[in-house]
Amino acid sequence: MAGQGKGNTSGGHRSRHDWVDFAKGFCIVAVVTMWVVGEMQGYVNRGEAGWLGYFAVFAKPFRMPDFFLISGLFLSRVIDRPWRHYLDTKVVHYLYFFVLWTLIVVPATWLLGHDTPATATEALSDLAWRLYDPFQMLWFVMMLSVYFVATRLLRRVPVWLLMPAALLLMLFPLETGIYHVDRFGVYFGYFYAGHVFADRFFAMADWARAHRRRAVAIVLVWALINGTLVKLQLTESILATTVLGFAGISAVVVISALVSEQRWAGLLKYLGRTSITVYLGFYLPMIVLVPLLRGSAIGQQHSLVGTLALVGCIGGAVLMAEIARRIGLGFLYERPSWARLAPARATPQATDERKRQQPA
Figure 1 (cartoon, helix red, strand yellow):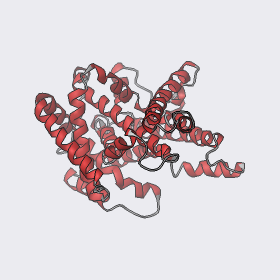
Figure 2: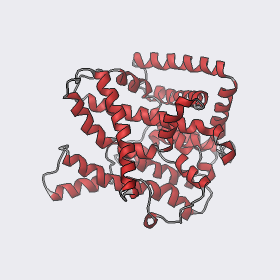
Figure 3: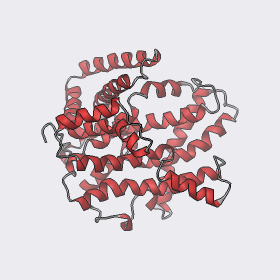
Figure 4: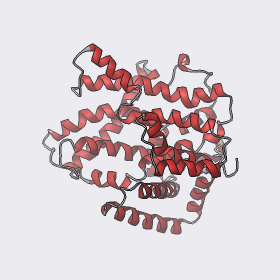
């Protein structure tokens, strides 16, 4: 397919593409920040979430677009594999976590006093509904499986035809009332761009490393423009959101390429490699931590509350996963054999590939 990125990331190129892990780590922090700020604003006036509030608003145009684009970067490595293998790694994989964590998170929120159903029938009905209309952050995991199927089915359509069509769906959203149909067009263009233009994003990262001063200058100009437009509330139109989404994605690629080799970047690269763990696990710690911190002696120190909540949510998610694996509950984060259509590959390269292609 003309212009389609290959995303070549063999073992010899791992250091060259470490920026992808950093970018994923940055995005997962940005997304958790958004949720923490949203939860805090149930307890404080809008805009009073400290520095986290400013960061959440600044990152709004590009945080989810970047997630979806990164998810498509390495798709060309597997898109032509047999359907059985493809469905296993790109559809069943995500649906497994979507269904499992829906059955975990929704009842857990009830136990914590959030929208608790009055009867068992109502509870079962609510759970069934959430398998159609995803609960909170789980929509991303479900939509990834939809995007992977759509891209496979449409892979013979020329890029010059499908990319403009995807952009039109973003600019003119569907309003059918059917969740999956309406949601499909919102981010598919970013995901598809990550797939077909992967080589260009990798080339952009290489250019940034080779021309650091110019890259830094470009990032500073972007940050000024993005921040100004956000401050002036000029980012709410769909066209502005789309343009700023792609601009922000490019900026994150450049920033990640520039700093991913630094020692201090190791934490974000780790979060990027384990992004599925953080994404699935941060919500429950958040809805416990934020009200506890807000009700404590530091409750009016919004920046401190937000910072502690952010660190606690991410750290709590990682700790939950580690404990789960140690006590025999690893299936919460790794699919067991019965939930696979094809045998799992056990090679180090395949393991690295699976980590890089995890969501969020």
